[in-house]
Length: 444
Image 1: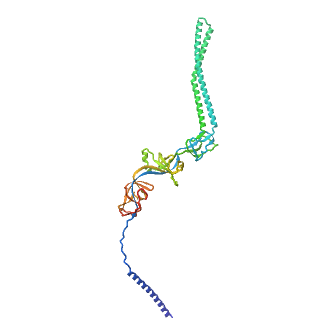
Image 2: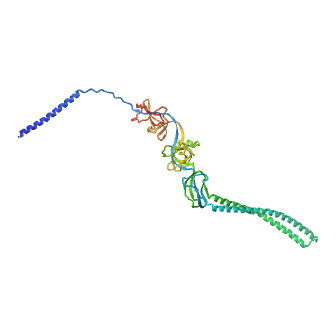
Image 3: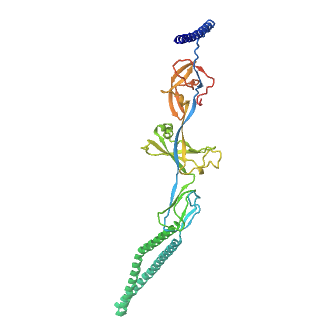
């Protein structure tokens, strides 16, 4: 039984081996046929194509230098409304509230004027009384002068009478009693004259006293009139109310703040300029001129860009120690804007606290080449195309400003500046130019 089983296993192995040999034979035959029927490939020479680049031609131009800064609008003339006389507020202008518009000479606040009016009347009465006293004294002076004339005449008459009686008494034609009486009359006349002269000598001092009293009365009247006038607080200009701190019926004291107002069309902006930026506007100040500027509302999104003209009014006396910048004040020009809508683009739209961008206009430089900033390589180098080859040229840089650089040396009109990347750039490498370049001064 074991022998037939072994024969069967050997037969199965031989059958499997035969199938493998047949498959290998067919594969070998097919491979030989493919190798024998192959075609010889055509040989092609490798052609190296130069990199293609975009270029734009350099052209010089006049370029105005500007200095950009940001600041906050503030009122040029801000007035705090304060009380000068005590009293109760009996009237307040309806426009005297935050944001209200006031006009020049408008009555803003009225303090109760009754007691001040009575004080003025009393002062006027004292002035009248002092004037009457001075007039009475002047009349008394006139009377005394007349009395002195009469007294002098009386002295002369009594003196003659006394002399006559003395002569008669010596000749025993007049009694001793008559002589004494004549002498007494003469002495009385002299005493009367002396009295009048004494009173007249005191008159100048009395006149000065009366004049001083009249002057004091006038001063008191002016003070009373001024106090009455100060019960009325008037606006000194056209403007707007910034804040209000009192109400009708309140009792106020001198020095108490009732609110504050600022003048219309008188706004400033304080900006801080880095010292390295001052070179672009420094020549203005050296020549005694003031640079002009433009103001626009920062972060304003809308179809209309509102711009106001301004000028540099003054430079502060010291550099800010924290930021190392120079503070500068710009005065916004009244009613100046270039907005398309004159109603919206007015100075009324600018209010204290508005955050604005400022462009200070500096000197104009000639023969300047303006190139996009990203094309300038380290070391102030530009890539150019010269006779279809790469030229790496160093240029003289005047200024980097925003997304552009200003070049004032190293370029000539017509130079072809490469505006696209050049991987593996090597001086003199061959290049091809695309036909979509742009001119210098325009972003490619």
